[in-house]
Image 1: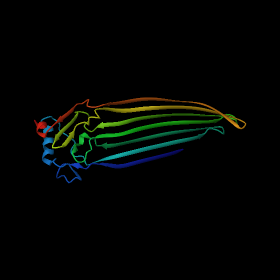
Image 2: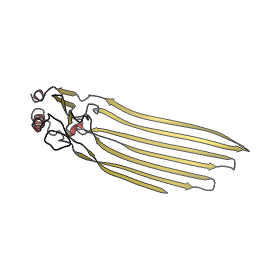
Image 3: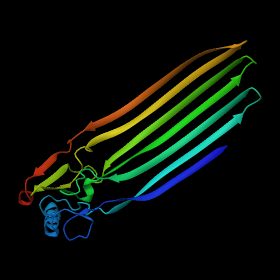
Length: 231
């Protein structure tokens, strides 16, 4: 029996911010006063209480498990079973121009995947000349692409002086989901006849895939000035 575990803990870092914030990437022309106007306007005009603030860092974790069992059934037969599990998640920027674009925290999204993989093998020597091998594996992958906004509103863009401020769910994450499974089966037989080996086998793979990607299903709202957003 063999087992392994691996865990990585880190942080996703973000550097964009309004003028005067002290962050490395300042969006020139985007002052703290404009920032406050947008936050207050979202609350008082549109009833949106939380835009997620200015993202600076977010913890990220990646975990992996592995378990393998080798079984010598007898002198002529042996089997192996393997299980793999992996899961990771990262907070991701959507519109990442470091000079002219700023994203409030609820415009970012979580991106990652969960993998569960199973496999088994059986090796058999039926006689000194005849052997078989059977393999089976099953992989299940569930991808995560989830708005920090929770998908409650669509994407909002406020444009002024060549700058764009974003909040709400990123337009490409409104209806975005991916998961799939793969089943693989393989059988092989070998027969040794003197100096020759005859082999025959068959293999089959079955896929089941769900892939949804539809933009702007929650709406895209573009304002050509801060004043129009506040009105």
